[in-house]
Length: 469
Image 1 (cartoon, one colour):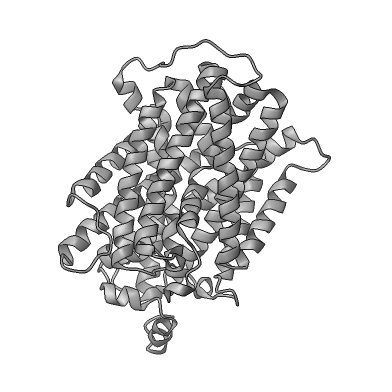
Image 2 (spheres, rainbow, N blue to C red):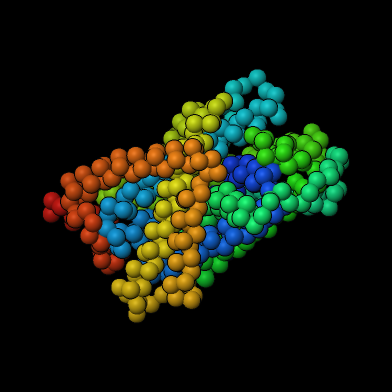
Protein backbone atom coordinates (compact mmCIF):
# COMPACT_ATOMS: atom_id res chain seq x y z
CA UNK A 1 0.00 0.00 0.00
CA UNK A 2 1.30 3.45 -0.92
CA UNK A 3 2.16 5.78 1.99
CA UNK A 4 -0.33 8.37 0.68
CA UNK A 5 -3.16 5.80 0.90
CA UNK A 6 -2.52 5.13 4.59
CA UNK A 7 -5.11 6.87 6.73
CA UNK A 8 -4.05 6.34 10.38
CA UNK A 9 -1.52 8.57 12.16
CA UNK A 10 0.24 8.30 15.52
CA UNK A 11 -2.81 9.65 17.36
CA UNK A 12 -4.99 6.83 15.98
CA UNK A 13 -2.37 4.22 16.93
CA UNK A 14 -2.36 5.53 20.52
CA UNK A 15 -6.18 5.61 20.67
CA UNK A 16 -6.45 2.02 19.36
CA UNK A 17 -3.87 0.87 21.94
CA UNK A 18 -5.76 2.63 24.71
CA UNK A 19 -9.08 1.44 23.29
CA UNK A 20 -8.95 -2.21 24.21
CA UNK A 21 -6.75 -1.81 27.28
CA UNK A 22 -9.00 0.55 29.27
CA UNK A 23 -12.14 -1.49 29.81
CA UNK A 24 -14.76 -1.71 32.56
CA UNK A 25 -13.13 -4.86 33.94
CA UNK A 26 -9.87 -2.90 34.13
CA UNK A 27 -11.59 -0.24 36.23
CA UNK A 28 -12.81 -3.07 38.50
CA UNK A 29 -9.33 -4.64 38.68
CA UNK A 30 -7.83 -1.21 39.40
CA UNK A 31 -10.17 -0.69 42.34
CA UNK A 32 -9.70 -4.17 43.74
CA UNK A 33 -5.91 -4.05 43.39
CA UNK A 34 -5.66 -0.63 45.08
CA UNK A 35 -8.16 -1.70 47.73
CA UNK A 36 -6.00 -4.73 48.60
CA UNK A 37 -2.59 -3.05 49.08
CA UNK A 38 -3.21 0.71 48.82
CA UNK A 39 -1.26 3.28 46.83
CA UNK A 40 1.73 0.90 46.49
CA UNK A 41 -0.39 -0.89 43.87
CA UNK A 42 1.07 1.76 41.53
CA UNK A 43 4.42 -0.09 41.88
CA UNK A 44 2.77 -3.33 40.72
CA UNK A 45 1.20 -1.42 37.83
CA UNK A 46 4.56 -0.01 36.70
CA UNK A 47 6.12 -3.50 36.69
CA UNK A 48 3.14 -4.92 34.73
CA UNK A 49 3.31 -2.00 32.27
CA UNK A 50 7.03 -2.59 31.65
CA UNK A 51 6.40 -6.31 31.07
CA UNK A 52 3.74 -5.47 28.51
CA UNK A 53 6.12 -3.04 26.84
CA UNK A 54 8.48 -5.98 26.20
CA UNK A 55 5.59 -7.75 24.46
CA UNK A 56 4.66 -4.81 22.20
CA UNK A 57 8.37 -4.37 21.41
CA UNK A 58 8.61 -8.02 20.31
CA UNK A 59 5.43 -7.71 18.24
CA UNK A 60 6.79 -4.51 16.66
CA UNK A 61 9.94 -6.33 15.59
CA UNK A 62 7.86 -9.15 14.11
CA UNK A 63 5.69 -6.60 12.31
CA UNK A 64 8.82 -4.92 10.93
CA UNK A 65 10.06 -8.26 9.60
CA UNK A 66 6.67 -9.28 8.16
CA UNK A 67 4.81 -6.01 7.43
CA UNK A 68 1.22 -5.69 6.20
CA UNK A 69 0.08 -9.07 7.56
CA UNK A 70 -3.59 -8.96 8.53
CA UNK A 71 -3.38 -11.93 10.90
CA UNK A 72 -0.52 -10.52 12.97
CA UNK A 73 0.61 -13.00 15.60
CA UNK A 74 -1.06 -15.90 13.76
CA UNK A 75 1.22 -15.41 10.75
CA UNK A 76 4.35 -14.81 12.84
CA UNK A 77 3.81 -18.05 14.78
CA UNK A 78 2.97 -19.99 11.60
CA UNK A 79 6.37 -18.96 10.19
CA UNK A 80 8.18 -19.92 13.40
CA UNK A 81 6.43 -22.96 14.90
CA UNK A 82 3.95 -24.23 12.35
CA UNK A 83 0.14 -24.34 12.20
CA UNK A 84 -0.58 -26.38 15.36
CA UNK A 85 0.49 -23.90 18.09
CA UNK A 86 -0.77 -21.07 15.86
CA UNK A 87 -4.32 -22.39 15.65
CA UNK A 88 -4.51 -23.27 19.36
CA UNK A 89 -3.17 -19.94 20.59
CA UNK A 90 -5.19 -17.77 18.20
CA UNK A 91 -8.55 -19.52 18.63
CA UNK A 92 -8.12 -19.90 22.39
CA UNK A 93 -6.05 -16.88 23.24
CA UNK A 94 -7.66 -14.31 21.00
CA UNK A 95 -11.05 -15.24 19.58
CA UNK A 96 -12.67 -17.02 22.54
CA UNK A 97 -11.05 -14.87 25.22
CA UNK A 98 -11.77 -11.52 23.58
CA UNK A 99 -15.33 -12.22 22.45
CA UNK A 100 -16.17 -13.56 25.91
CA UNK A 101 -14.59 -10.67 27.81
CA UNK A 102 -16.20 -8.08 25.51
CA UNK A 103 -19.58 -9.70 26.11
CA UNK A 104 -19.16 -9.44 29.86
CA UNK A 105 -17.93 -5.84 29.49
CA UNK A 106 -21.13 -5.06 27.60
CA UNK A 107 -23.34 -6.64 30.27
CA UNK A 108 -21.56 -4.70 33.07
CA UNK A 109 -22.14 -1.52 31.05
CA UNK A 110 -25.83 -2.38 30.66
CA UNK A 111 -26.13 -2.96 34.42
CA UNK A 112 -24.49 0.42 35.17
CA UNK A 113 -26.78 2.21 32.69
CA UNK A 114 -29.91 0.55 34.11
CA UNK A 115 -29.04 1.44 37.71
CA UNK A 116 -28.11 5.06 36.91
CA UNK A 117 -30.68 5.91 34.21
CA UNK A 118 -34.11 4.64 35.23
CA UNK A 119 -35.97 3.94 32.00
CA UNK A 120 -38.69 1.28 31.49
CA UNK A 121 -36.54 -0.84 29.15
CA UNK A 122 -34.58 -4.06 29.78
CA UNK A 123 -30.89 -3.50 30.54
CA UNK A 124 -29.91 -5.75 27.62
CA UNK A 125 -31.40 -3.17 25.24
CA UNK A 126 -28.47 -0.83 25.98
CA UNK A 127 -26.09 -3.60 24.92
CA UNK A 128 -28.04 -4.31 21.74
CA UNK A 129 -28.08 -0.65 20.67
CA UNK A 130 -24.35 -0.23 21.31
CA UNK A 131 -23.45 -3.49 19.55
CA UNK A 132 -25.43 -2.59 16.43
CA UNK A 133 -23.99 0.95 16.27
CA UNK A 134 -20.38 -0.29 16.65
CA UNK A 135 -20.95 -3.08 14.09
CA UNK A 136 -22.39 -0.69 11.48
CA UNK A 137 -19.58 1.82 12.06
CA UNK A 138 -16.95 -0.88 11.53
CA UNK A 139 -18.63 -2.06 8.33
CA UNK A 140 -17.94 1.41 6.91
CA UNK A 141 -14.19 0.88 7.07
CA UNK A 142 -11.06 1.95 8.87
CA UNK A 143 -11.77 5.68 8.50
CA UNK A 144 -15.04 5.50 10.47
CA UNK A 145 -13.45 3.12 13.00
CA UNK A 146 -10.58 5.55 13.59
CA UNK A 147 -12.87 8.58 13.98
CA UNK A 148 -14.93 6.84 16.66
CA UNK A 149 -11.81 5.46 18.36
CA UNK A 150 -10.03 8.84 18.46
CA UNK A 151 -13.05 10.62 19.96
CA UNK A 152 -13.93 7.91 22.48
CA UNK A 153 -10.32 7.41 23.63
CA UNK A 154 -9.89 11.18 24.10
CA UNK A 155 -13.08 11.50 26.18
CA UNK A 156 -12.30 8.32 28.13
CA UNK A 157 -8.73 9.19 29.10
CA UNK A 158 -9.66 12.85 29.68
CA UNK A 159 -12.55 11.96 32.00
CA UNK A 160 -10.47 9.46 34.00
CA UNK A 161 -7.64 11.96 34.33
CA UNK A 162 -9.93 14.77 35.51
CA UNK A 163 -11.74 12.52 38.02
CA UNK A 164 -8.38 11.26 39.27
CA UNK A 165 -6.90 14.77 39.63
CA UNK A 166 -10.01 16.03 41.48
CA UNK A 167 -9.63 13.15 43.96
CA UNK A 168 -5.84 13.39 44.19
CA UNK A 169 -5.97 17.13 45.03
CA UNK A 170 -8.89 16.71 47.47
CA UNK A 171 -11.20 18.93 45.39
CA UNK A 172 -14.27 16.65 45.51
CA UNK A 173 -17.59 17.59 47.11
CA UNK A 174 -17.69 14.36 49.12
CA UNK A 175 -16.10 13.66 52.50
CA UNK A 176 -12.39 12.82 52.46
CA UNK A 177 -11.24 9.69 54.32
CA UNK A 178 -8.20 9.18 56.52
CA UNK A 179 -6.37 5.95 55.70
CA UNK A 180 -2.82 4.65 55.25
CA UNK A 181 -1.06 4.89 51.88
CA UNK A 182 0.11 1.28 52.07
CA UNK A 183 -1.73 -1.88 53.07
CA UNK A 184 1.10 -4.15 51.90
CA UNK A 185 2.90 -5.94 54.72
CA UNK A 186 6.09 -6.43 52.69
CA UNK A 187 7.60 -6.12 49.19
CA UNK A 188 6.47 -9.64 48.29
CA UNK A 189 2.80 -8.75 48.83
CA UNK A 190 3.19 -5.90 46.33
CA UNK A 191 4.89 -8.19 43.78
CA UNK A 192 2.07 -10.73 44.19
CA UNK A 193 -0.36 -8.09 42.87
CA UNK A 194 1.53 -7.73 39.57
CA UNK A 195 -0.68 -10.52 38.16
CA UNK A 196 -3.78 -8.40 38.94
CA UNK A 197 -2.13 -5.29 37.48
CA UNK A 198 -1.14 -7.20 34.31
CA UNK A 199 -4.78 -7.28 33.20
CA UNK A 200 -4.77 -3.45 33.17
CA UNK A 201 -2.37 -3.40 30.20
CA UNK A 202 -3.38 -6.35 28.00
CA UNK A 203 -4.45 -5.60 24.43
CA UNK A 204 -2.26 -2.77 23.11
CA UNK A 205 -1.13 -5.06 20.27
CA UNK A 206 -4.50 -4.69 18.51
CA UNK A 207 -2.76 -2.03 16.44
CA UNK A 208 -0.85 -4.76 14.55
CA UNK A 209 -3.75 -5.95 12.31
CA UNK A 210 -4.35 -2.36 11.10
CA UNK A 211 -0.65 -1.47 10.78
CA UNK A 212 -0.92 -1.61 6.97
CA UNK A 213 -3.17 1.47 7.21
CA UNK A 214 -0.73 3.42 9.43
CA UNK A 215 1.40 6.26 8.06
CA UNK A 216 5.12 5.73 8.73
CA UNK A 217 4.27 2.39 10.37
CA UNK A 218 7.90 1.54 11.23
CA UNK A 219 7.92 4.47 13.69
CA UNK A 220 4.28 5.00 14.61
CA UNK A 221 3.29 1.40 15.42
CA UNK A 222 5.88 0.69 18.17
CA UNK A 223 5.89 4.31 19.40
CA UNK A 224 2.09 4.49 19.52
CA UNK A 225 1.77 1.26 21.53
CA UNK A 226 4.46 2.39 24.00
CA UNK A 227 2.84 5.82 24.42
CA UNK A 228 -0.55 4.15 24.90
CA UNK A 229 0.74 1.90 27.70
CA UNK A 230 2.60 4.74 29.42
CA UNK A 231 -0.47 6.98 29.18
CA UNK A 232 -2.70 4.30 30.69
CA UNK A 233 -0.23 3.73 33.54
CA UNK A 234 -0.11 7.46 34.32
CA UNK A 235 -3.90 7.96 34.25
CA UNK A 236 -4.59 4.89 36.38
CA UNK A 237 -1.89 5.93 38.89
CA UNK A 238 -3.66 9.29 39.31
CA UNK A 239 -6.93 7.38 39.84
CA UNK A 240 -5.34 5.30 42.61
CA UNK A 241 -4.22 8.50 44.39
CA UNK A 242 -7.81 9.74 44.07
CA UNK A 243 -9.12 6.47 45.54
CA UNK A 244 -6.86 7.00 48.57
CA UNK A 245 -8.54 10.32 49.45
CA UNK A 246 -12.20 9.42 48.93
CA UNK A 247 -12.79 5.67 49.09
CA UNK A 248 -11.99 3.36 52.06
CA UNK A 249 -9.65 0.58 50.91
CA UNK A 250 -11.88 -2.17 52.34
CA UNK A 251 -15.00 -0.94 50.51
CA UNK A 252 -13.00 -0.49 47.31
CA UNK A 253 -11.62 -4.05 47.40
CA UNK A 254 -15.05 -5.60 48.01
CA UNK A 255 -17.05 -3.51 45.54
CA UNK A 256 -18.34 -5.07 42.31
CA UNK A 257 -18.22 -1.60 40.71
CA UNK A 258 -15.41 0.32 42.48
CA UNK A 259 -15.35 3.05 39.82
CA UNK A 260 -19.03 3.89 40.51
CA UNK A 261 -18.31 3.81 44.27
CA UNK A 262 -15.44 6.27 43.80
CA UNK A 263 -17.51 8.56 41.56
CA UNK A 264 -20.31 8.68 44.12
CA UNK A 265 -17.95 9.35 47.04
CA UNK A 266 -16.09 12.02 45.06
CA UNK A 267 -18.91 14.11 43.56
CA UNK A 268 -22.15 12.56 44.80
CA UNK A 269 -24.77 11.59 42.24
CA UNK A 270 -23.08 13.72 39.57
CA UNK A 271 -19.88 11.70 40.07
CA UNK A 272 -21.79 8.43 39.75
CA UNK A 273 -23.38 9.60 36.49
CA UNK A 274 -19.98 10.76 35.21
CA UNK A 275 -18.43 7.38 36.04
CA UNK A 276 -21.30 5.66 34.25
CA UNK A 277 -20.43 7.82 31.24
CA UNK A 278 -16.79 6.70 31.59
CA UNK A 279 -17.97 3.06 31.74
CA UNK A 280 -19.98 3.60 28.56
CA UNK A 281 -16.97 5.11 26.80
CA UNK A 282 -14.78 2.21 28.00
CA UNK A 283 -17.20 -0.37 26.59
CA UNK A 284 -17.64 1.42 23.24
CA UNK A 285 -13.85 1.78 22.98
CA UNK A 286 -13.24 -1.87 23.89
CA UNK A 287 -15.90 -3.24 21.58
CA UNK A 288 -14.82 -1.00 18.71
CA UNK A 289 -11.21 -2.21 19.03
CA UNK A 290 -12.27 -5.84 19.51
CA UNK A 291 -14.60 -5.96 16.49
CA UNK A 292 -12.04 -4.26 14.26
CA UNK A 293 -9.03 -6.22 15.53
CA UNK A 294 -10.63 -9.67 15.64
CA UNK A 295 -12.23 -9.35 12.20
CA UNK A 296 -8.75 -8.50 10.82
CA UNK A 297 -7.17 -11.45 12.62
CA UNK A 298 -9.93 -13.77 11.34
CA UNK A 299 -9.33 -12.42 7.84
CA UNK A 300 -5.62 -13.21 8.11
CA UNK A 301 -6.32 -16.72 9.43
CA UNK A 302 -8.84 -17.35 6.64
CA UNK A 303 -6.14 -16.42 4.12
CA UNK A 304 -4.06 -19.22 5.64
CA UNK A 305 -7.09 -21.58 5.46
CA UNK A 306 -7.13 -21.75 9.26
CA UNK A 307 -10.71 -20.48 9.29
CA UNK A 308 -13.60 -20.71 6.79
CA UNK A 309 -12.90 -18.72 3.62
CA UNK A 310 -15.87 -16.40 4.15
CA UNK A 311 -13.90 -14.57 6.89
CA UNK A 312 -11.50 -13.29 4.19
CA UNK A 313 -14.20 -11.76 1.97
CA UNK A 314 -14.45 -7.95 2.04
CA UNK A 315 -17.20 -5.43 1.25
CA UNK A 316 -16.83 -2.32 -0.93
CA UNK A 317 -15.10 -0.50 1.95
CA UNK A 318 -12.43 -3.22 2.14
CA UNK A 319 -13.84 -4.51 5.44
CA UNK A 320 -13.96 -8.26 6.24
CA UNK A 321 -17.72 -7.96 6.73
CA UNK A 322 -18.46 -11.51 7.91
CA UNK A 323 -15.87 -11.25 10.69
CA UNK A 324 -17.34 -7.93 11.86
CA UNK A 325 -20.87 -9.40 12.01
CA UNK A 326 -19.69 -12.72 13.51
CA UNK A 327 -17.72 -11.07 16.34
CA UNK A 328 -20.51 -8.54 17.06
CA UNK A 329 -23.20 -11.24 17.26
CA UNK A 330 -21.21 -13.43 19.65
CA UNK A 331 -20.29 -10.46 21.85
CA UNK A 332 -24.04 -9.87 22.23
CA UNK A 333 -24.64 -13.59 22.91
CA UNK A 334 -22.10 -13.60 25.77
CA UNK A 335 -23.56 -10.32 27.05
CA UNK A 336 -27.00 -11.95 27.16
CA UNK A 337 -25.62 -15.06 28.91
CA UNK A 338 -23.90 -12.97 31.58
CA UNK A 339 -26.78 -10.49 32.01
CA UNK A 340 -27.51 -10.30 35.73
CA UNK A 341 -24.82 -12.78 36.80
CA UNK A 342 -21.31 -12.60 35.38
CA UNK A 343 -19.50 -14.72 38.01
CA UNK A 344 -19.11 -17.85 35.86
CA UNK A 345 -18.14 -15.87 32.76
CA UNK A 346 -15.69 -13.78 34.80
CA UNK A 347 -13.98 -17.01 35.83
CA UNK A 348 -13.75 -18.01 32.18
CA UNK A 349 -12.19 -14.62 31.39
CA UNK A 350 -9.38 -15.52 33.79
CA UNK A 351 -8.98 -18.77 31.87
CA UNK A 352 -8.97 -16.79 28.63
CA UNK A 353 -6.38 -14.38 30.04
CA UNK A 354 -4.05 -17.36 30.56
CA UNK A 355 -4.41 -18.14 26.85
CA UNK A 356 -3.72 -14.48 26.11
CA UNK A 357 -0.55 -14.64 28.20
CA UNK A 358 0.52 -17.82 26.41
CA UNK A 359 0.13 -16.00 23.09
CA UNK A 360 2.42 -13.26 24.49
CA UNK A 361 5.02 -15.90 25.35
CA UNK A 362 4.77 -17.19 21.77
CA UNK A 363 5.42 -13.66 20.46
CA UNK A 364 8.69 -13.47 22.42
CA UNK A 365 9.65 -16.97 21.24
CA UNK A 366 8.90 -15.98 17.63
CA UNK A 367 11.38 -13.09 17.93
CA UNK A 368 14.12 -15.37 19.29
CA UNK A 369 13.48 -18.04 16.63
CA UNK A 370 13.52 -15.58 13.70
CA UNK A 371 16.66 -13.88 14.99
CA UNK A 372 18.34 -17.29 14.97
CA UNK A 373 17.03 -18.26 11.52
CA UNK A 374 17.27 -14.87 9.81
CA UNK A 375 19.93 -12.85 11.65
CA UNK A 376 20.72 -10.69 8.59
CA UNK A 377 17.14 -9.99 7.49
CA UNK A 378 16.34 -6.24 7.41
CA UNK A 379 14.23 -5.03 10.34
CA UNK A 380 13.03 -1.42 10.51
CA UNK A 381 12.53 -1.95 14.25
CA UNK A 382 14.51 -4.25 16.53
CA UNK A 383 14.14 -4.87 20.27
CA UNK A 384 17.36 -3.54 21.86
CA UNK A 385 19.81 -5.49 24.08
CA UNK A 386 19.70 -8.74 22.10
CA UNK A 387 17.58 -11.51 23.67
CA UNK A 388 17.36 -9.78 27.09
CA UNK A 389 13.88 -8.18 26.85
CA UNK A 390 12.14 -11.16 25.15
CA UNK A 391 13.56 -13.44 27.87
CA UNK A 392 12.43 -11.02 30.61
CA UNK A 393 8.98 -10.93 28.97
CA UNK A 394 8.77 -14.74 28.91
CA UNK A 395 9.87 -15.08 32.56
CA UNK A 396 7.50 -12.34 33.73
CA UNK A 397 4.53 -13.77 31.85
CA UNK A 398 5.17 -17.27 33.20
CA UNK A 399 5.12 -15.71 36.67
CA UNK A 400 1.75 -14.10 35.87
CA UNK A 401 0.29 -17.45 34.81
CA UNK A 402 1.56 -19.10 38.00
CA UNK A 403 -0.07 -16.32 40.05
CA UNK A 404 -3.23 -15.82 38.02
CA UNK A 405 -5.29 -15.90 41.22
CA UNK A 406 -4.43 -15.38 44.90
CA UNK A 407 -6.93 -18.13 45.81
CA UNK A 408 -5.19 -21.54 45.46
CA UNK A 409 -8.46 -23.37 44.76
CA UNK A 410 -9.47 -20.94 42.02
CA UNK A 411 -5.93 -20.98 40.61
CA UNK A 412 -5.96 -24.80 40.33
CA UNK A 413 -9.39 -24.69 38.68
CA UNK A 414 -8.13 -22.13 36.14
CA UNK A 415 -5.18 -24.36 35.29
CA UNK A 416 -7.48 -27.41 35.01
CA UNK A 417 -9.96 -25.68 32.68
CA UNK A 418 -7.05 -24.26 30.64
CA UNK A 419 -5.56 -27.76 30.30
CA UNK A 420 -8.88 -29.28 29.19
CA UNK A 421 -9.45 -26.43 26.70
CA UNK A 422 -5.93 -26.98 25.35
CA UNK A 423 -6.71 -30.67 24.84
CA UNK A 424 -10.00 -30.00 23.00
CA UNK A 425 -8.45 -27.29 20.82
CA UNK A 426 -5.46 -29.55 20.18
CA UNK A 427 -7.64 -32.37 18.83
CA UNK A 428 -9.66 -29.92 16.69
CA UNK A 429 -6.47 -28.25 15.39
CA UNK A 430 -4.81 -31.56 14.47
CA UNK A 431 -7.72 -32.73 12.30
CA UNK A 432 -8.34 -29.28 10.74
CA UNK A 433 -4.67 -28.89 9.74
CA UNK A 434 -4.27 -32.48 8.60
CA UNK A 435 -7.45 -32.87 6.55
CA UNK A 436 -8.66 -29.33 5.73
CA UNK A 437 -5.39 -27.45 5.29
CA UNK A 438 -3.48 -30.55 4.14
CA UNK A 439 -0.28 -29.29 5.73
CA UNK A 440 2.27 -30.86 8.09
CA UNK A 441 0.94 -30.24 11.61
CA UNK A 442 4.16 -29.08 13.29
CA UNK A 443 6.31 -27.91 10.38
CA UNK A 444 6.97 -24.17 10.20
CA UNK A 445 6.07 -22.36 6.97
CA UNK A 446 8.71 -20.21 5.21
CA UNK A 447 8.16 -16.47 5.68
CA UNK A 448 7.92 -15.97 1.90
CA UNK A 449 5.00 -18.39 1.72
CA UNK A 450 3.25 -16.81 4.74
CA UNK A 451 3.59 -13.39 3.12
CA UNK A 452 2.29 -14.82 -0.19
CA UNK A 453 -0.86 -15.96 1.64
CA UNK A 454 -1.93 -12.30 1.78
CA UNK A 455 -2.64 -12.54 -1.96
CA UNK A 456 -6.04 -14.03 -2.80
CA UNK A 457 -4.48 -15.98 -5.71
CA UNK A 458 -2.54 -18.13 -3.23
CA UNK A 459 -5.77 -19.71 -1.99
CA UNK A 460 -7.14 -20.03 -5.54
CA UNK A 461 -4.04 -21.86 -6.77
CA UNK A 462 -3.92 -24.18 -3.74
CA UNK A 463 -7.59 -25.02 -4.19
CA UNK A 464 -7.15 -25.62 -7.94
CA UNK A 465 -4.36 -28.08 -7.20
CA UNK A 466 -6.56 -29.91 -4.70
CA UNK A 467 -4.33 -29.01 -1.75
CA UNK A 468 -7.02 -26.99 0.07
CA UNK A 469 -10.71 -27.73 0.05
